[in-house]
View 1: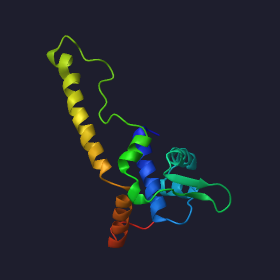
View 2: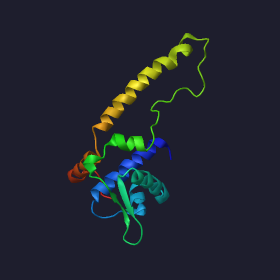
View 3: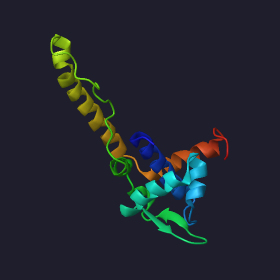
Amino acid sequence: MTKNSRFTVAVHALALLAIVRGKPATSDYIARSVNTNPVVIRRILGVLGKAGLVETHPGAGGGSELAKKPSDISLLEVYRLMGNVDLFPMHTQPPSEDCVCGRHIQTVLSGVFSEAQQAMEHVLDGLTIEDIELQIEELEESGLCEPC
């Protein structure tokens, strides 16, 4: 699983835990919603648990629950927990120093990419798991999405 999808899966799992609040969710249940292997979910829940966002209770009747209110979990926090990812990776090979564009493109793009990263992080910092939960519930109520 790529680091990019780890963030998406983590937000999915947290939103699902917010929606089923009060009922522990097993990794199998979450994995069915995400359409992935439960091992993937358990790894992500482990990271979220170490950060204090999720509590997991083993055994019969066990499962995972949010350890914090959904309104107290920012998407930026989750993004950083799942590992910062370069949104726009640079060339895999250094560009040619013999070309004016090749000599300077990475310097120019580094500035552009840095601004884009900051803008994205600003947006994520303004959103919470509760915001995601509410948007999902609005879609469900509007009938625009198919039930599981």
